[in-house]
Length: 282
Image (spheres, rainbow, N blue to C red):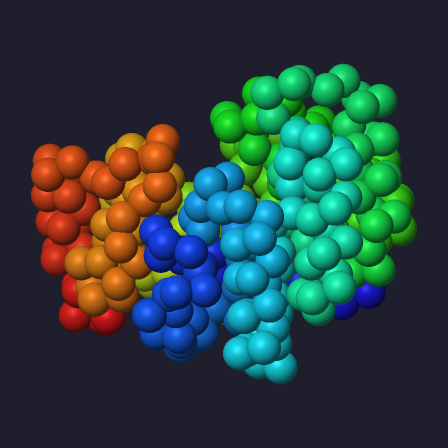
């Protein structure tokens, strides 16, 4: 089974339909050239929750066509409707992505048996790796380590993107990926393989150094902690899209119910980018 890359970049698309994106190539090149070795398409940063199925499929098609031979492509195919998630997973597999990122079902709060059935159905819908996404702050439901170990024995379930801060540990049968920027150093210390990280859009090379330079890992992490905090000054992906626009990677605004950063929030983000030299790094 193909292993997920260390730092896939969560590509932020334009506000309009992806088929009319005039700056898509620059956004992709920015990610590829800044330490990321893969792309997450239609995840949280890419506003997957407000893209139509048609837009997601078109996005995956464009990515496979343009960079399918160069980057590891991960499609966000999760939903709180198992049948819908199976459908998206089948479509993404047909298009030719390399893996699927499948968020824990949100809102309807399934129990353990429901979660097991959900992920079994999705894993059967593809021959590509499935990355579990555990983010209780958004989904309410938390997949505990015992459940993750059980799911790690399911064919095609290959990794977990862990965005829970408490009780994080390696899981037999699963690659462990950091789901929060400020967790990366800790996750790598315990044997994790990488992360799917918001700040990789801005300082991908530095995030790569956290993985590749163990002697300096925590020093590098601490140097960027203010940026990690700024990227969550309000609901993501609002801050990172503001930051990308500031450094000249044009991603436009957001779709409702998400809104652009306020002037006060932009001021905080701009100050951090300037103080840490990110505007010059771009």
